[in-house]
Length: 378
Image (cartoon, rainbow, N blue to C red; front, side, top):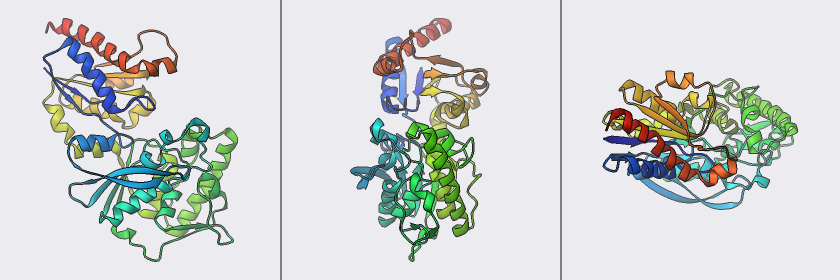
């Protein structure tokens, strides 16, 4: 039996690689002779670089940068084997995981550090930049990235603005670098959400609270983002307010579309094509995928859904496990899942679940496959 393990990370808990290992342990307890292939997946956010490294698709570049509150950090990104294409994870310099809870504040957090990584890749000769955009700590519309690349965001007194979503309140103009070589650079955004920049389904309304915004902050951030979008349109003749996916990473996607002519693409699709995932799936007998929380956002192109659709295409059973699951489940089953299972084995707090997650995943897989084995009489 050939079993493919292809989960996303359990965010803020386990990496996709750790999830793979726990699933593998469970499989070995039931099918010790199974041929197991592990692919720790990503939908464009955290973990993609690790996946590419496993598949020997490029080299990791270590680079000094700044975290979301502008502290010096050692960061990294990947340059693919063509030496022209760079994969940069926003979370490596501007990610929520880089901050303590008390430090989360989208009024001041910035994507500037991510811009430094992009700048380094361009200086090394890359003319294709793919930005994996998940896990951000920011709500600055990508203004920090623009600043790092030489754009100057100024108020009406011609003073450069402070970093973060709070500073955008006074934005009056964006000065384009005199040596603007970015027209020769291809920017692609690997995105896993469909949220637009503004409104009830926008960047601020949906995502800023988890980044530390209060209700009062959210009102200010939304107004500031409206100002930012208007100045982007005035400067670059692009309306970024209703771009599908533009709200990703606190509006970073929209800002890069407006200023850098970036293209937004489904992250899972990009990654699955790079690693030739479909070919790997075609030769397997069973697939186990999963993520920390299976909910309505999972239906918008995240890893488990993409895996399930490939499984459905080739009539291969796909089992999904998750830390928590939101109803209704019928939508997931229609899209290709054979079974959806919570890893919980009894009522417990979230913190306790996090502590025991490796064991819970392993034990969940044992329960599922023991039943699977008995039914199929393997």
